[in-house]
Image (cartoon, rainbow, N blue to C red; front, side, top):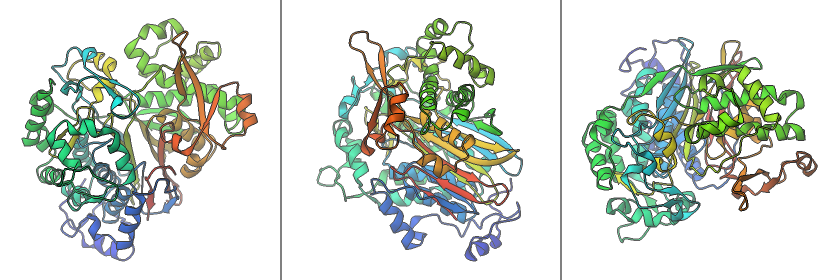
Length: 605
């Protein structure tokens, strides 16, 4: 890749003439002339996407273009920032990183954080190679008794956390290292420019929206514990922010400016790192400067599998989400879903899809009680290497249909994340998941110079205990790329409570039923099941959940499963959020879509 400092005025000229695509790898943006700041966008664009932040159900209009596209689960204003990166000569990686940085600022660090995690699957058009980058949690080297970490997950408000606040719940996040590493390897824009939107929005302020207020109301107790944190969310008179107030984050803006100038090491070996360690240790945590200094992103190969003429490139090891995703596709093949027809039209297809997506529980069972798998499936190999094979899928489905079905264990761990997918004018593709894995700002309520520090350890104790202290933590995220006949045809990503169910359904909608990303999102789907413990036996009893009115009642009755129809308001906490951008390899047409019931948007040009 050529130096980002090379200047080509023809790039700026082509943009002024309507965004004509670049045809030469030697052309790079005029970095001196670039600003991605929202104040530099067309006024109508800025007004439009600021309004999206306020809309409860803004819809999911399909975005169609030929030069580039971005889609994400939350914060359409952030997707517009990513599109600006594309328009000013950036790559899909630049667009994805700009979007992710902006999403955190717009979300006030509530469910995603600059000290969270990031996972990337990227297609490089110049080489035809697909790579996987893992910048996910590292465990703390000095934490040798993970099962004794305080706290557990509840169900609402401050009851989301049960236990005393503890610095032991913090893990070492790689988000900022991931942004820097992705930009260094696959970007054209200078690292500093990617921060333009997030710095300006933090500095100038955003309007405190109903969605942010919904996060804030039940968490005031946690956020009041430390003066530095409370100051972020209260006004000069000491009162809490209300809907419609201007929310400025001056401490965050200052931190982001330092990171933009000095690089990610400002957070891992510089002044911010020392402040973080002091704050965590003050609350009993074991994190040290060594834990931060030792953090490195991991580059590797994606997991690869074939399905109905497509090649899926999924996030690789040590993540277990990619293996779960591929295993679900092989189970769907063994269960004859394509032959039975779509689950919205065939009751048996619905039953089989609802049951085969139970495979998401395999890694949790392996980490906590591996003997259960040995007892239920004697002789079967549930290693990630085995789970991605078609033979494993066939054998697994045969055992399930013979009666050995996974109990859907009660899994109350939060799935707060965000997604970004981007494609640029050269055909590069980037799929991203980033997360805080926390209970809305974290139960400890720690913020360091405007950056929220989550509590991801409280819901991952068994998995933390299963790995070496100080090593990379396996994760459940699911995202990747689809290729057909050797050509990349789609980038996709997913998040939230029902991410596995939604990913399996969306991919099968595309690969087996020929849908576009928007059609896949709009098709009737089932969500993460409702799980309640039987008071007599203590065994989880599951109820399938669907959107009211989407399925014919007679079909639901024929499934033989208990099915609950839920409202749009309930849907948000049950359905996974999947986004995708498809590219026609013959025409270059891009079709992008995100979900209709969040403020994420798809944009293209």
